[in-house]
Length: 117
Image (cartoon, rainbow, N blue to C red; front, side, top):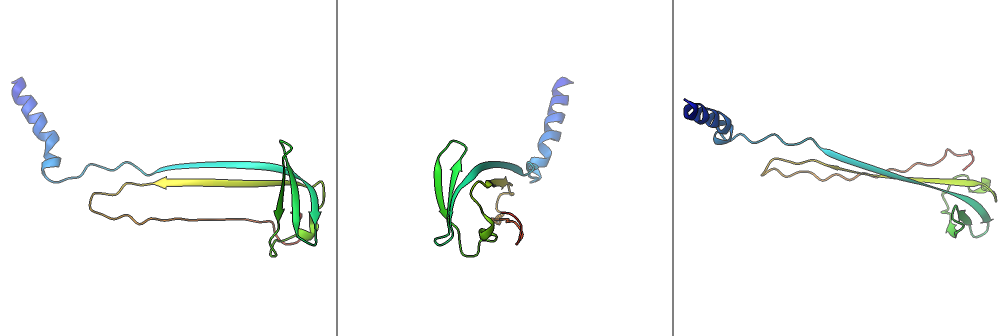
């Protein structure tokens, strides 16, 4: 009787595979990471649009502000600047034989016109 039960159980477990049923796919996986950095404005050259920042570790870095940068005229020596960057990845598996559609997205934000940068 145990052999019959084992055979019956095995047949029940293998029946979906024999019928061509595919196993369920795992749900999509997602990962997100972010980093923030704070610096102090050391110098602003209005003519060349260069901004020199001092990072928390004391390192100096000079950037040239693009012509369309809002509120450039409001940046002053001693201002604190916070830059935030976030990256995310999502992965989903598709059934064999089906082609997935790759998707990429990018977003950015900035302060409203007239506000302190």
